[in-house]
Length: 460
Figure 1 (tube, rainbow, N blue to C red):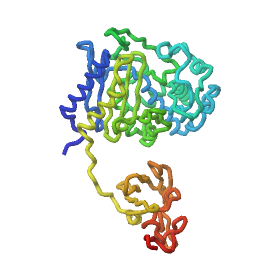
Figure 2: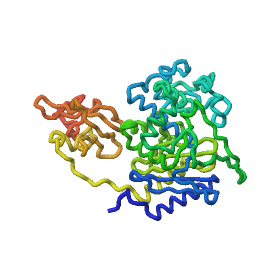
Figure 3: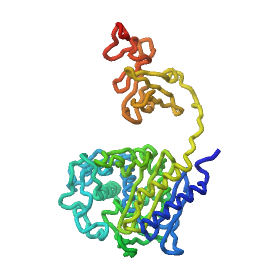
Figure 4: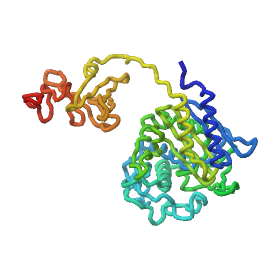
C-alpha cells in the first residue's frame, strides 16, 4: 500500500517544477523559489533564476513581509494562554494613550479594529523606521477610520500596536521575545529580523521593459511586527507544521486551530477570503487554505496550508510585483493534492465500548427531519442529517454529562440527554430542540405536545 510519506512521483515533481518555471518566467522575477511539505516533511523544493550558477536553495533567505504578522500573532496568543492579557480587553488597557478607542486585542489580531491601514506619509515600507520613533508618529492624528468591530479593514498599524503590546507585557523588545519564545524552540534559525547570507537581493522590475532597479532594504522600527522578517522555504515549511499540529513549547494545538477560525466577515464581493487570528483563510477551487501572503518592496512571499490534504506550500520571489504569488502557491498545493491524494488512515475499532452511549446511537428525529447519532472512536458524538441540507455537528463530552458542539450551527451549544423518572431516555435536548426516536413521538416530552389523534391521512 502506498503512503503519503513516500517520495512524490516523477510526474508530480515535473508538474511542480513546470509551475515554478512559469511563475519565474511569466512573472518576470529575478529569482523564484518554492517548496512543498507533505506528511510532516519537505517533499519537494525547487528554484529558478535569471543568473546562471546562482540558483537559490531551501536555505536562502528572502524577506517575507506580512507573513511576519503570523509570528506576531503567535506571541500575542502566548500572552493570552499564560493569562497575562485578555483578548476581549481594549488595547488601551495595555497601551494607554494610543487613541485607538474601544478596539480590542482580538479585533487587532483579526483586522477588525477599524484602524488605518498605513502610517502617515512618507511610505513606511521604503523609509527607515527612525522617521517614526514613537507610536504617536506611527498612528498619526486620525488612527481610527472605522468603528471597531464593524468591518474587516487590513491594518499594518494594528500589528505595530500588537508588537508594542508584547513589548509592554514582556518587558523586552519584540524581536527578542520572538527569538526566545518562537524561533529558537521551533528551530527556525534561518528566520531573522536582518538578512543573513545567503540571501536574495530585492529588485523592482520595470512593468513595460526588461530592466530592473535595486529596492532599498529598510529596518522598519516600530513597524517590525507587521513585516520585518527574513526567512527561507525550509524554515517556513517547518513553521507550517507548527501551525497545523502546535508545539507545547510555543502554543498548544487547540490554540493554533483557534487561529484559523474566521473572526471577521468577508469583504463584500470577496466571499472566498476572510481572516482569523494572524492567518488569512481563502477558498479556491473547492479547497480551503490558511496561511499568509507577504510583500515588501523587492519581495513577495506566500505560505498556504491545506490541512485536509496534509499539504503545505511556500513560494518566495525577489521582485516588488509580477507573479501572482498567492495563486501560484495554491497551485503547488493543488498539484500535489490532486495528483497524489492523501491516503485515509486505516479504520480501527474503538479501544472500549460505553454501553450507555452505544444505546443512544442510531436514528433520531427533530420534528419530521431524520438524523443519525454516531459514537466516534475518540469517544465523541456526531449528529448528522440523513438527507442533505440539515444541521449537524460533532460533540465532545463535558464533565457534567452534557455535550458541547464543536462545529457548524451548533458550535458551542449544549446537547443533553433528558431522561424520564425511571431512567429511560425521553429525548435529546440540543439548544432547546427536542430530538425523539420517532417523529413527534407521543410518548416523549415534545414541546407544544402531540395531538391525541396522532398522524392523519386525508380521510380523517
